[in-house]
Structure formats: C-alpha cells, structure tokens
Image 1 (cartoon, rainbow, N blue to C red):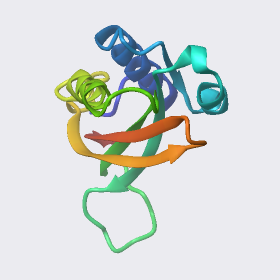
Image 2 (cartoon, rainbow, N blue to C red):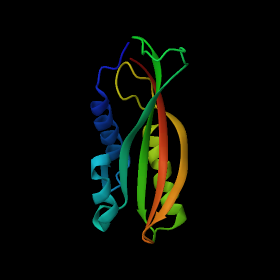
Image 3 (cartoon, helix red, strand yellow):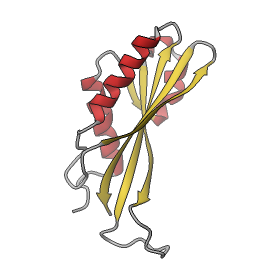
Image 4 (tube, rainbow, N blue to C red):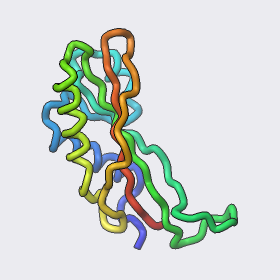
Length: 141
C-alpha cells in the first residue's frame, strides 16, 4: 500500500509531531525557514525538519522505478542550540527529538519511524551548536 499522504504532507506531519512532543523547542520549521532559524536568537532552540531522500530497498539492476518498489525514506531534524547551553541541556533536547520520532507513523502506507543516527554537526558563528537527528521509514511507491 502506498502512502496516503504526499511527501510534503508527511513533512508537515513530522513538523507537527516534533512541535507537540518537544515543547522546549521555540521553533520547529521546514527547510525554507533554515536561514531565519539560524539568524534569530529569539527562535532558539530550534529544529529544522528536512526530507533527506528515498533509497531503493534493493536494486533491481534497472534504472526504471516499478510500481510497488520498496523505499527507505530518510528524514533529518537539524537541532540548533545556543552555544551557551550546557552539554547536558543540548543532549537532552536531542534525545527528546529522537524520542518524538522513533515509533511514530507519518501516515498509513508508511512504516513507523526508526532511529537512523544522531551526530554533532558543527559550531556555527561561535554562537550556535548544531546536531542532526536522522530517522528512516519504509514506504512503497
């Protein structure tokens, strides 16, 4: 069964899920708002939800996509924090984002999200710390 929501609707649903489950985040937005989230202190801590890509479960050896093909769908949540937060505070928020996604189902036709890794990305502009929390799910096209 294919997903009942479009990719954009799944993105919106994941944004809503993180907003509801991690109230400590002042802003949870899509990629189009990344620059604003990075530049505005009032919006931190923030999360930016990004579709990271679809990858075939197994290669068919053909460049054609076939109806019913299984895909691994990846989502990234970029967590942006003030550098002044303690490491414990930062890691707590990262854990909350992870907990908000793991086991959650975006819609019928898409399996529940599973953890796909978490990593420290970088310090930005000497005022921000950036982490990435990744999720994966299975879907059929």
